Length: 110
Image 1: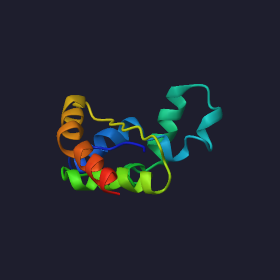
Image 2 (image 1 turned 60 degrees about the horizontal axis):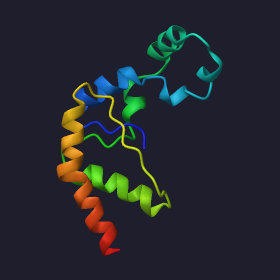
Image 3 (image 1 turned 90 degrees about the vertical axis):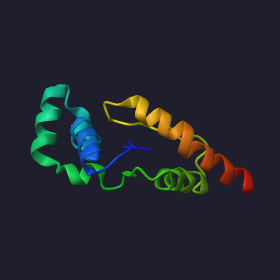
């Protein structure tokens, strides 16, 4: 899983600014040794919307739970949840209270 902003479009854009290089991380940025150059090129070449278009951006725990469940249904056995937001405790608390219990219940029912 890439990034999972808990919030709205502005929260997604906050994270996308930090991870703007992702859509081109392997081609063409992988062989660029200077991170400043990568950051400058990504800012010029990659629209923010392209960065977060496939992220589950929501305050609805069901959206995030469904995203994880889709990974497990596809055969993933381990998922890493990452958030590019500054308020990491918000994400940790949200996932611990709201998202992971839903995922666990559904996996146990399957």
